[in-house]
Amino acid sequence: MRPRFRHVAFSILGLAVLAQLVPYGRRHSNPPIVAEPAWDTRTTRDLAVTACFDCHSNQTHWPWYSHVAPFSWLVQRDVDRGRAALNFSEWHQRPSKAVDALPTLCEGAMPPAPYRRTHALARLTLREKELLYDGFARTLSGVNEFQASEPALHPEPGDGGSGRGGF
Ligand code: HEC
Image (cartoon, rainbow, N blue to C red; front, side, top):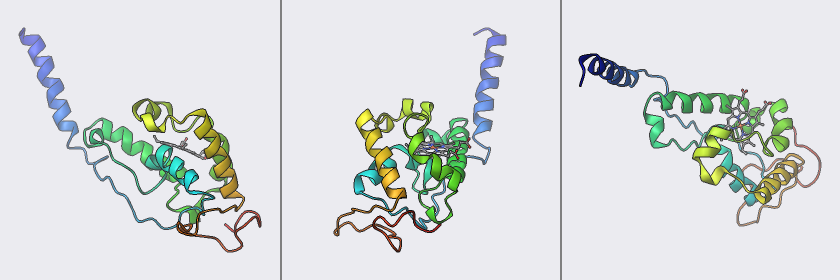
């Protein structure tokens, strides 16, 4: 190895090792689930779990590379910003702007493209997107057809077509 090349190689290696010491991105916290939407059906929830929960819930599945900087920083940033925008585990404080955007976003922009590339299951088919779109719309308008054996996690008073539940 030429000395100059070796120098560069060791510098890069050194930086990669040092990067692991940065605390940001190592916490991997999944805070408690406070309140979920009163999902209209289990299918809607399942689809949301598959495609949205990693960034929009407190049930993030942290992949192995989320332990390795600099990827850990990118994952942490997505989760922090995603949860701040909309958190299905803290539905009691859902921002109305994000809720309004919810049905339309799942048609294209969400989940973000880099995530779709690395998560095969989150690449919803057209049919699944339609189901999720309808499911969000029905959930937001208070429809609830969860089976009795699978009760809604947090049914709101006045469920059953009485319009959007109280904030
Ligand atoms: C890889 C992480 C990730 C996944 C997976 C993901 N999102 Fe997001 N989402 C984000 C981030 C980050 C933001 C915040 C964007 C910003 O602040 O500009 C966001 C913002 C949003 C917002 C708020 C938009 C607004 O105008 O306030 C909605 C609604 C949303 N996402 C819906 C979804 C839905 C529905 C899914 C699943 C189909 C999903 N997201 C999957 C990362 C993600």
